[in-house]
Each structure stands twice: as C-alpha cells, then as structure tokens.
Image (cartoon, rainbow, N blue to C red; front, side, top):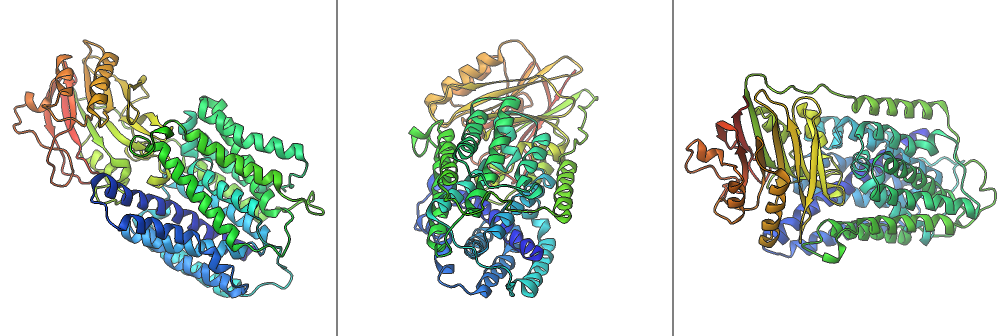
Amino acid sequence: MRIRTLTAAAVLVFFLQALRVLFSTLFGIIYDQVFEGPLTAWLPLSAGLVVAAMLTPLIAARSNRDRLESVFALLAIAVRPLLSINAAGVRYFGALVVVASGAAYLTLCFKRKRLAWRALIWALVVEQLLRALGDTFDLSLMDNFLPFQIVVSLILAVLVLRFDTRTPQAEPAEGGLPWVAALGLGAFLFLETSLLALPGAVARWANLPYAPLAAFILTATAVPLLLRARLVSTPAAKVLQAVLIVGGMLLGYFSQGWLAGAGLILAQWGAVQALVGILAGGHSGAIKTGGRLAVGLLFFLVLNFANAFAFTYPYTLPAMRGLGWAVYSAAGLVLAGALILRSAASGEEDLVSKTGWPTAAALVGALLLVIWGVRPLPTSSLPADGTLRLATWNIHYGYDDVWHTTLPKIAQAIEAAGVDAIALQEVDAGRMTSYSADDAYFLGRRLGMQVAYLPTVEHLTGIALLYKGDPAQVESILLPSLQEQTGILRVHLPAAGGEIQAHSIWLGLSAEDTQAQIQAALDFIGPGTRASFGGDFNSEFDDPEIPFVLAQGFADPFQLLGIDPPPLTDPAISPTKRIDFVFLRDLVPVRAWVPDSLASDHRMVVVEVASE
C-alpha cells in the first residue's frame, strides 16, 4: 500500500503541476490573440482542448479494469518531462496529456477513496516543498531539472509496472463519487492551486513574511496525514468547519497582518479536513465516478476563468473589479456545502487513517526541508564608491516575448548590470497564470536584495522595488484608475550625499487614466528631494504625461548625457518606442544605457548616478 500511495501521489503531483502549466501557457495564447492579434481559430481550439482534457474521466469510467489505472499512470509519468522543457508550445501540449491522464487516473483512484485523499494531500505537500526549494517557482519545472525529472519518471514507471499492475485482494472497492462531492472536489482544487496551498499568495494577501507561512501552511495541509483524522459527523461541527473555510478567506482578503494570516491558515486546515470528509464519507458502491468527476473539473475550470476576470476586468468584464473575494467565497461555500451534505455512513466517526513512523518521518523531513529552503539569505550592500546604479524593468510577469519563463534570466541580467535598486512592473505574486510564482520574492532571493512590493490588483499582481542594503522605509499609494488599478511605491535609500528617494510606477493604458495618475504620483513624490522616478510610463517622451514629470524638476539622464537618439525600450525584440524611463532629480548621471537582454517583452533601463 505504501508503494501504491507513493506512485499515486507522484501522478497527482504531476497532475497539479500540469494544471498550472496549462493555465500559464493558455494565458500566453489568449494574451497574444486578444492584445496583439490577429484573432485566429487557435484561440477557441486551444481553450476547447483544455475542456476536452477535463472530460477524460468520462473515458476512464467506461472500464473497471485495474490495469487501466496503471496505463493512465504510466502515460502521465512518461509525458511529465515535457513540462520541464522551457518552450510554451511543448509545455502546453505536454500539460494537456498529463492533465487528461491524471484526471482519468484520479477517476479510477476513487475505487479506493482512502488512497485518493491521502495521495492528493501528499501531492500538495510535495508541491509546496518543491516551491520552497525553488524560491516559490516549482523547482522541477525549471529546464535544468529535466535530466533529474527523466530519472524520476523512469523510477516511477518501474514501480508502477512492478507493483501497481497487481491489485491486492484485501483492498476492496469502496464506491464512487456523488455529485455534491465532485463539485466540492472541483472547488477544493481551485482553492488549493490558486491560494490556500501557496504560502507566497497567502503572504501577499496577509502582507506577512513568506518564510513562517511556508511552514504553517505545510503543517496545516499535512494534519490529516500526521494526526489520526476523524470524519466530521455532527451538523454543528460541519457548520463550524464551513465557517472556518469561508470566514478564514474573507478575513485574509479584507484584513492585514497575522489576523489575516491566521484566517488563511485555518481556512487551509478546514479545506483539507473537508476533502477527507467528502472523499472518505459514506457513498454507495453503485455510484459511478466518471461523469461526476468531469463535472467537478469543469467547475474548477469555471472558477479559474471567473477569477481571471477579476484580474482582467478592464479588458473583459468591468463588473468583476474587486470581486476576487466573491469567487473564492463561492468556491469555499461549495466545498463547505459538499461537506455539510455528505451522507452519513455506519461507523464513520471512527478513525479514517492511522499514522505510522514512516509517514511521520517523511512529513517532519518535508517540514525541515521547507524551513531550510526559506531560510534567510545574506543581502548585498549598497556600494561605497560614491555611485549608485538605478534601473527600471517591466518584467512581463516573468515571461519573455514568446512566453518562455525567464525569472532566472531576469535575475542574471540585473546582476550583470550591477544594479543597486530597480523598479519592476507587471510583477505577479502567486497567480495561476504565471506558474504561481512570487516574481519579486524569487528575484530578491537570487539577487540578495530587499523587496518592497505593492499589490494593485487582487493582492497578487502589482509593482515592486528591489534594492540592496538594509531594510529601508517604504511608502506607497494606489493611484486613481478608471481601468486597471495601479500605484506608486517609494523606498528611502541611504547614500553618501544624503538620502535618495527611489520610486517605482506603472501607468495605465488610457490617456484619461495616465494624466490623472501622473499628477497624483507627483503629488505623492513631492518637491525638492533627491529622487529617482522609474517605471513603465506607457507614454513616449513627447506625450502629454512627460512634461508633468519634467516640470517637477526631474530630468532625462539620456538627455543630460547627450545620448541622441536615446535607445528604445519596447518591444524588447526590435524596439520601436521608448516608454520606460528612469528620471532623476538633483542627481548627476554618470552613465545610462539599455542592456540588450530579451528576458522580458520590454528592455531594462539602467542609470548610474553620483550619490555624493
């Protein structure tokens, strides 16, 4: 049984990873088709293939053969290495196959429901571990992990062929999955993959450090495995658990600090306990699983698209502005409802799992590895030679122009430029559409820099400012925004000649928005201080927004240095315009340049100034 749980957990890890890859690559397809055009038949076809992948439980349900379970497991294991190849097309089609085979495998797992919920929770634990070791980007999805992934897949294939093709006689089928449980499972998968099992996302919602939350979230996830879980059976206990799930998320969304963090940790604990309840509860063996699980996965898909509208409301459904909490609450209510409506079974108050020392040792080991993975790292010091390098870069959510994931390359380019403080725009912090990575945290760890982050849309996307030295004073405000919400961020940097106030901004796409935003931003900056003002202004030098900046005493370092024409910044490949600037006030530029890195869809701008 331990080998079967190991192989089942591995397949479900691959299934969860493929879900993230699928939504991330689909985001690139939709972005290119809608924002860059032209619209082609590939847009509905690519979305239709995702729907088709969610429907494979219908195929799996047509057969009760035990060997079919191994066939789907082997297919997911064999294709999984494609997800570690950093090419959007390869990852998209690979993820389709892994999701389809993983969903079919999960369907057949429900013949042994204890295996299903235990393997799914183990998968969540392993995925959290991989993210902690990869600075919130799943370590196994990086291209340099491919050789290791091939070895892992080979080992797992041998285990499946050796053990999983034989079903123990003492392990009887336990029934299927009712409609309410299937919908609850879809809601659970949404909550886990988009928030509750992501310490980085929880940290941004609560405005707390990532490191302690990584340990707390892993512990809350593993409770049913580590402690001997009991099924929640009384109506009052079920209602209390429902309150923990929904109330905890609302507390996390609308409050800050450890009150919000505690709410989200309790919501995660309640969610995994609810999973045990809806999967291990009393179900008739005559219930069929395939169609019901397919509906649950389609519900998962609907929740993800609804959540995407909350992030892209200016370009899709304006009524979804600020309604991310409603999507999460709807998912929480469905999960809680599935628990409350779960039918009772004889003896269900008994223990549903027993913890042996191998399980306890593995979980303690995972927790220690997570703690090691998020340990504090040394930070670089600000230079003492009287110069400072300031920069700005729109990092395109960690993608280049053709949708390779590029966070390591972005870090390498910033390091190669010797940057001391950099304003970043289009910075995600746990979104499903960008591999659920926290871009700013990842870059800060790789560069040995402090991170100041301002979430502007749904807690999980915004702007950042990375800087060397000790933690400094940080201030920020949201700017008036008729379309996508944005803001401005300020860090007070110590320097030999006196403090420098470094600012990061992203201006919207609407002319009406940007003129109001630039005025509000300049009011926030105020007059007279030594300052840099960097960002993606979405405006060229001759547009009306820039004179507002120059009138406040800022200057363009390329003009001051006589660099004519100044280098262009957008798009990164064969740029045609300059919309990314680092303006200076009361600072003397020594050098200014635009590196040729293509790690984003914009180019970075770097300015070296005399800080004395």
